[in-house]
Image 1 (cartoon, helix red, strand yellow):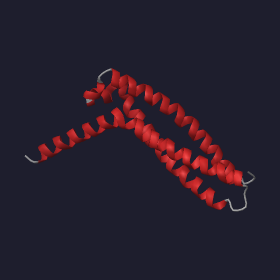
Image 2 (cartoon, rainbow, N blue to C red):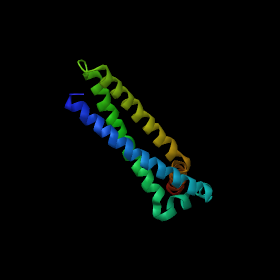
Image 3 (cartoon, rainbow, N blue to C red):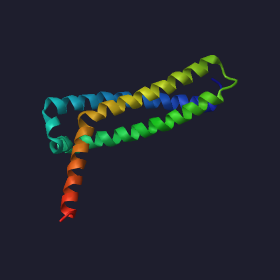
Image 4 (cartoon, helix red, strand yellow):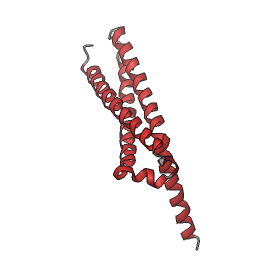
Length: 136
């Protein structure tokens, strides 16, 4: 693993993995609190929970997903630029690429229930309200 570019991408992947793992654990705990507290049926109450904490988690999820997309782009480039590197480095880059994809999928899965559903409900109700007011 002599190429400095690959080391940088691998270090960023390690940092991304640690940060995303900690975030997913916290997001799962928040989801459990929201579902156990009966907030899933009340979109506005869910979004206001603990000073709009679900919205903060939603925005962090978006940031981590975008960072993961950028990271997959660089990993993909590193995979195809490692012509002369060892098979071990190639394998590590492939595993990192797949790991980041899995984390992006987990982020989407964990945010969709119940937080994203509440955001969509509020947006739909807001859209209906704006349409009703504009149609007068």
